[in-house]
Amino acid sequence: MPMYKVRPLHGAPGAVLAEQLPACMYRLPNLHRSPPPAAPPHQEEVDPSLQALESRQEEILKRLYELKSAVDGLSKMIQTPDADFDVTNIIQTDEHSPLTANAELDSMLGKDYGALKDIVINANPSLPPLSLLVLHSLLCERYKILSAVHTHSSVKSVPENLLKCFGEQTKQQPRQEYQLGFTLIWKDVLKPQMKFSIQTMCPIEGEGNIARFLFSLLGQKYNAVTSTLIDSWVDTAIFQLKEGSNKEKGAVLRSMNAALGKTSWLVGNELTVADVVAWCALQQTGSANAAPANVQKWMKSCENLAPFNSVIKLLK
Image 1 (cartoon, rainbow, N blue to C red):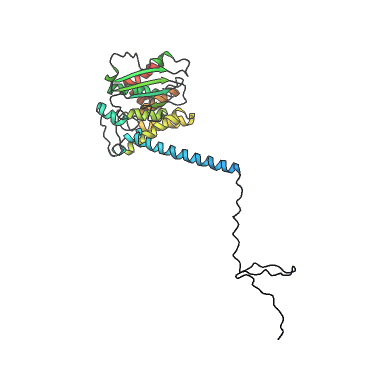
Image 2 (cartoon, rainbow, N blue to C red; image 1 turned 60 degrees about the vertical axis):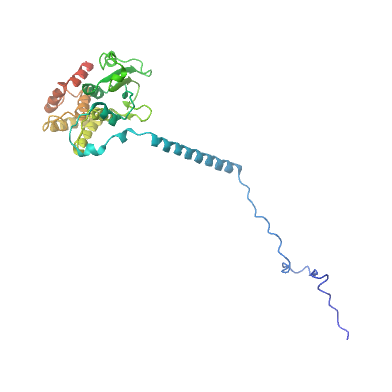
């Protein structure tokens, strides 16, 4: 029986014949064929300047990490001066215990393994820190001090009396025989600066701060309330009596007069660093003659002490 013929769909075994589809129809992917390999993702081009910035940032971070490691290593080797002070003892006791020579100096200034502990102060000769000269004399009464005065190249000329502010220094003994060195350098600086360990500490700046430290070497210890009053008077003397306006100076003199009407000294019945700094501020500002009665009496008490008397001679 005759039938119509159909074109075979398979040629060779496993091969699929391509169908001729009309051009007017859209094509669909062949589901019987394996999918073509996926094209690699498109990589955007990176700006060279951005690459350079990233490299620079990585280099900076690497250097910062190295610096941090170096600082951490140094911090384990070096002790800061403040770490040598036992603040708990200062707050808890009100006793005035004297230092026991070199042992106490080691606890305050650190051990130098036989080397002389040398306090170096830079000061401007146009405004000499009188309180530091008074404290130098007080320290000389307690310790065997090798004193020296030098002039820095930044200063053209220094008055003769300032060059001899420590008196005639005649070194008759070896350096190791002294307990403490005290070197004053006349230099063009805005504020007095002090160091006692040149390689391991930042300078202490300001006449009041240096005076506090030097007075602490005398071994005086106070409770928290007394220490706060002393610090308050020191700051008042520096920032108001010495550097303040006439109105501020008058207010400070009235406060001093009221305090000295109750006690012989500004804080309590013994000389403190507050008396030293306040007396020197009055001398430098010329306010001594206009001071009230109690302040005048207090100033005479200060001047009866040899360390203050030596500064008066220096002012003349």
